[in-house]
Amino acid sequence: MENVSVSTTSIIHLPDDCLSFIYQRLDNLEDHDSFGLTCHRFLNIQNTNRRSLQFQCSLSLLIHSSLSQTNPAVNSDHLHRLLARFQWLEHLSLSGCTLLNDSSLASLRYPGARLRSLHLDCCYGVSDDGISTVASFCPNLRVVSLYRCGISDVGLETLARAASSRLRCVNLSYCPLVSDSGVRALSQACLRIESVKISNCKSITGVGFSGSSPSLGYVDAESCCQLEAKGIAGIVSGGGIEFLNVSGAVCNIRRDGLVPIGSGVASKLRVLNLRMCRTVGDESIRAIAKGCPLLQEWNLALCHEVRVLGWEGVGKWCRKLERLHVNRCRNLCDQGLLGIRSGCKSLRMLYMNGNARLTPTAVEMFKLHRGDVTLRSEEVMVIGPDWRLYTRG
Image (cartoon, rainbow, N blue to C red; front, side, top):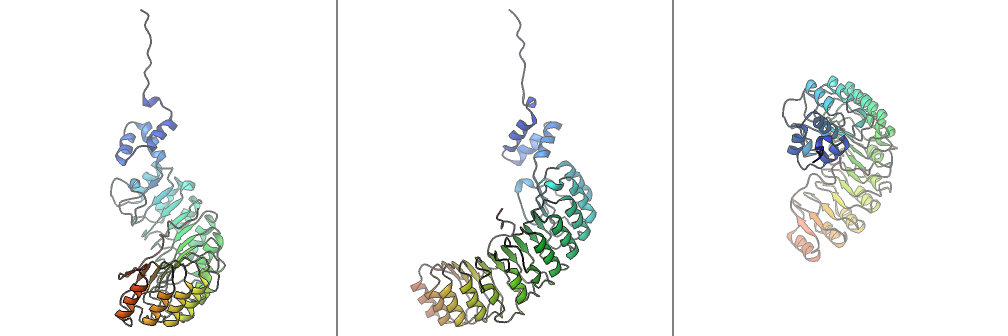
């Protein structure tokens, strides 16, 4: 009988694109690691397929499977080795890596233009020089978080120029060296910017946003103690604002200081947080209620200067309002609650407690006439979408 040669075929004979296809469909992290331990070729496929990387010290979890498996104090040498290995990353979080400095970011040349999002929260050693390195190597960034970094207007302007065509979301919270000059550079260079966080930036008045792009739909300016009426007008000047948080930020603004929000330029506004804006009066509230017809959630907790006329304006014009926060408003009285009760036909949730001028009878009458509204006693600090998720593209 003639011998027949039988050729054997195994998985290692598959081309790399087929092996990548198999790798991408493995269910869990342990399977990914086992795949990479098979041989050098499989390890290389694992490396080239990794798109996200973060560490156990990260302040926010992006993707669970992107966690580094060890928990060392990440230094420049660790970062260099990891980025040299994972050169196809699109998302990188270095948040909480407090040992890193400006020179550490030179390793970003490996993922380079492929990188889409970069988080440097609490990287205290990163300053303008480091941001200049980021700008040089990563021109296609869409999301950048610089919470508590040492960046100033100089570094922000460099980043804005380099990533002007791509940048969508920027977090500058607790960056004390950033002023209106840096914000102006960002808003003028990045014509596709959609989301900006400047909370607790003590040098920003808001005027840097004047003439911003219509794409700007999300601004979080919580506790920006220097915010001015002109600055608020600048924030909404692009006409695309949908979310605005100025809670605790307008203590120096007059009772009518927020009237520009209701001038018609913020007609797309859906979520507005005015919590702890203690000086805002009826003039501003009525203007906003009338000029922002799409408003769905409004936080007016601790707005002590809103009186009967203001509450009646909310009831009369906020036809699409679904959630209203009135916790601890000193001047919400029975007549003001009646104004809300008689209007706000879309209201579904009313957060209310600590309103000393409200009588139990008025509250019971509200419940009787508005059985479609749920009354909640808790006080909510944060409303609206996460800044990283607010993007139209």
